[in-house]
Image (tube, rainbow, N blue to C red; front, side, top):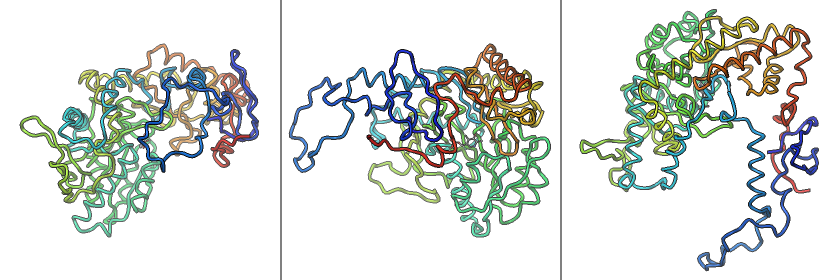
Length: 514
Ligand SMILES: *Cc1c(COP(=O)(O)O)cnc(C)c1O
């Protein structure tokens, strides 16, 4: 928590709070003391008297007390409340983190997910028919939105879904007898880093193809990279520059012509909802970042879910078990009709995650889709694109646009002009914190120098978009007058600029008592 090391960081104090000096040189600034520092021997928040019941055999009983901090209940509650107040979240304000679709997460989703919190992960399908019904119906909704034929809910993130799909590509080529020669996966140079990483994890060589002047995959470069040794091509649409791949059908045809498969990275599906279906664009499969498109934004790293939707020719290779719906409306798993029956895997790549994936996140997605309905989902996609284009129009004069075309759900600015004036994309993102906003994604995609990648999402009202644009414009104007003006930003946040290199290279992750 308070573990970022490096250069001394200015400390901000909350007026109502006295912060003991915990020795910044060992574990960083103490905005909020650790529980261990707050603890005093003999304090307790226990309301229920613990009695020895004799249930635990003596040999397992602990001989020495646990070294837990001793605190009262209000101390614990205040500690976590203070930490939450130091944080920034989508409940607190706009979170324009490009590529992450940090939309507001309706609270009804959490209520729905909580209904399933008491289930045992290995409970029989006989006593969990409602759970299977939800999962099955969610599968149908995802297939409808994507225009695909079959789906697995097992992958727990986009990256794991990519990995799953590429294992399936391998199994597909194996079945056709040329897996050994198909050693390469092609990715565009604008791809999310997980694409080449997943390919490498599956043992593939990665070939990168460049983007053309309009920000699309360069079709000629792709064609010359294609050959009989290619297993697949990974395409994000809209791509990570926030642009629709204008020649997506031609791209898919070219890949299929050499017997390779097309992986659709559907992380940017928010832009397409109700407008276009990946299944109609030529993809053999597409993953859905449920934790982007269908709420549950994943700030701080999780949890997520990345269902993988496939066309019929890839179905045999899908992870097992599959949920089956009988004519009488009951559900079971195809591999475990009786709980003890051995698994029938066939050509399946096997199990790659929990049978029903990250179910809490999936339950939220189901609730989200059901509350919006078909009309609401179409509106979501359109509003996301509208919000991004509105913001782009407001900012175009003060910032350079990487590829100046109408955007989809997000857009990428370049702070090249500001860099020449003496301030960087990082400075701008830090200055935004002083303006009360979360920073956009910076320095990604890699092909845009000084990139500022902005995704407002559909959940922000016009006033918020206007306020964000005004803040961005104020920053650009300050830089025009005095580039050094934002070098010290942020100045109003609880912590100033951190030594990020030190934090990455020499992290102090363990608390050591003095
Ligand atoms: C977010 C994202 C991913 C990876 O998804 P995770 O769930 O974070 O693993 C892959 N591709 C694109 C384009 C993304 O935006």
